[in-house]
Every structure is written in C-alpha cells, then in structure tokens.
Image 1 (cartoon, rainbow, N blue to C red):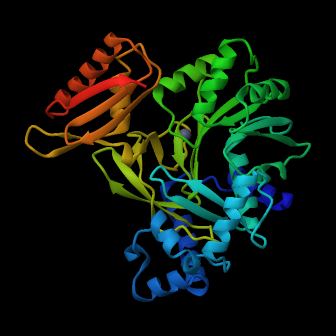
Image 2 (tube, protein in one colour):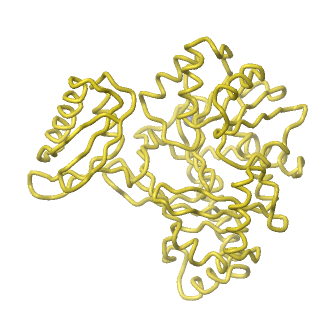
Image 3 (cartoon, helix red, strand yellow):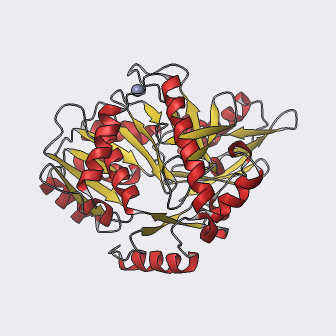
Amino acid sequence: MSKFAILREFVAVRWLRPLRTRAAVERRQRRLLRSHLRFLRQRSAYFREQLATRSFSDLPLMDKSVMMSHFDEINTVGAGRDEALALAIENERSRDFEADLGSNSVGLSSGTSGHRGLFVVSSPERDAWVGTVLARALPRGRLLGHRIALFLRADNSLYESVGSRAVSFRYFDVYSDMDENIARLQEYRPTILVAPPSVLRLIARAADAGAFDVVPQRVYSVAEVLEIADEQRIRESLGQPLLHQLYQCTEGFLAHTCERGVIHLNEDNILVEREVLDAERFTPIITDLRRRAQPIVRYRLGDVLRERDRRCPCGSALTAIERIEGREGDTLVFRGLDGRDVPVFADVITRALLYADGFDEYRITQIGASRLQIALDTVDDRSRRRVEDEVGALADRSDASGPISRSWTM
Ligand SMILES: [Zn+2]
C-alpha cells in the first residue's frame, strides 16, 4: 500500500476535480474512455478482438457469466481463472485474506443469482479506491483523528494497511459474534460507522437496549439495499439526522451520498449508460474508466435505480439518484387487466407494506403468474390479512388483477 498514492487520489477527488457542470463531467469521461480503449486494445485479448470490428457503443454487454467464461482473456494481468478462484476460495475460508496473486488481490463476491463472481484488483487500483472512498466518506471540516469502524463481509487487508495516526480503522467481521462486535464497537467509539443495513439494524437495537451509546458523526449504509423502514429506525436509534450510503459492489464504487444525503453517481470515474425500465427507473450499464487489471466495460448490473427529478442543492453535476431500489430479480410481475405483464418493483411493494404493521421481516416469493407466497415473522392473523389487503390494493392501483397471495409465518 502506498500512502502517497492514497493521498494523491484523496486530494484529487476532494479538491482538484470539482466537476461543476455536465459538460465538465462528460469531457473528463470522453478523455478517460479514449485512453482506456487504447489500453484495452493493447492489453486485453478479449477487448482487442471485440474492438477490431466494432466501436465502444456496440460492444456486447457484460455480466457475471461473461466475466467468468472469458476471465483469462479479459483480465490484463495474466491471471488464470482456476488459479485465481482457488486462491480466493482459500482466502475466504481462512478469513485472513493474505494470499495475493502477484501484486494483485483476488476476492469473491456472492451473487443474488447464486453465481460467484471473481475479482482481481491491482495494488495501485486499491490505493486509488481507498483514496476515493475516504474522500467521499470523511465529513467536511475536521479531517484528522477519525476512528472509522467497518463492518464487512470480507477482505480486511484492504483497510488495516491504511490505518495511521491521521485516521484509524477498525475492522469488524460480520461473521463474528454480534454481541462481541458491539462491545468492541462501544469501546472503540467510532466517529464514522460503515456497515450493511442488516448490521446497522442490530447496532440500532443495541443502542435502544443501552448497549451502545456512541453517536457517530456519520453512519454509512453499504453493500445491501437500504429499506425505508430500516433507514428511519437506524437514524432514530443512532441519533443521525440522515443516513449516508456508499454504493459499492464487486464491479466498482458506483455512488456516494453528498453532504445533503443525496446519492450521486461516481461519474468522475465511471461511465453509466441506462437501460430504461419505466419513466423514472433504469438499470445501470457501467464502464469503469480507470480499472485496468480486470476491465469492467459495458457491464449490466441488474440493480434498479430511480433518478431524482431535480438537481441536488449541493451543486454537484454528478447525476443525482432518488433511491437505489434493489435488484431487478426482486421485481414481481402482476397480470394486467389488459392481459399484459405489469412489473411491480421491490421498492413499490416495500412502500405498500409500510401501511401494514405487526411484523418486522417479510419475504415475498412469486410462485407463478399472479401467485405470491408471503412469509411474515408473526403469528398474528390480522397482520397477515393486512398484508394481503395491501398487496391487493397495490394490484388495483397498478391496473392488474389481484394476485392470489398465501401468507404464513416465517
Ligand atoms: Zn448532492
């Protein structure tokens, strides 16, 4: 790890690249894309072949299965898929994440679809990533002396090495005992807390019970979709006026919240094309303009994003997002009154169920056209009927025939 490289990126993201206008954002993207395509033609066998006959905008879309089946030709550091996979699995199993592939780190991502993804990151890329995340995550004003608590699924080596007197990091393994984690967290007294919403919920519960009394300056939700009900509960219990988000996945660091708590796409490093889903929603197709060890080019993510219909008051020209709503695979399909399929996005369901109460957790499974199974963590019949009623009302509002729902206790 090079502290200098991290600092250079931090300074660039924080102060040197204001990108106040769309034209400035697009100018930067065009310049980075030109040089990236030049690099890919020289160094990636896969892209050399693709780019011989077509331009960037005609490149076939990538996804996890393309990445895994062409892994050896796509990456530019000579990594073989089987060797990298074996190393990543060993790292995951031992949970020490020490073994690297040359100067590159390897890791696994678990997909909602069940496919495992494999990622390779070079050490300069890691430095740049840490610098960018810090620049996005540290509050304005006081920069030094922060204690950052990170709850993560994997790869602590990334963070421990950047700890210094200026900023300290402590890593918490989400697989460890949660009571112990919270006791350690209480003792560490973080100024910044970064965790998936499922973990934040547990910390919030600990705060309610008096087991955690620290009010961090900032709380970041990462790695999972932040549900509206959770957001409220976490904010209240942890004394936060707003909850920040870092939208980070294996494919890249895609978005962050600004001082106002509004999500902005990281378009200074990532080109985002849109596959339109409806008037407000789209699925991002991303090209990381700087990631070279394992190029991410026209990669279709399958997440559902809702764009904000007005500019963010912070003045940033980076696209503002109203909400990251979840996976496209979480979309239900109702049968429209006119016979057509009506997509019902996960977020719409969640909002509908805010009106029903008496339960904390639910799981909805579509088991056929117009057939839903709804699992609730309650034995209360009234709650179950409320949920079925809300789903029925939602179908009415969507001009769809009411799906047959059957609910039971989780
Ligand atoms: Zn903003």
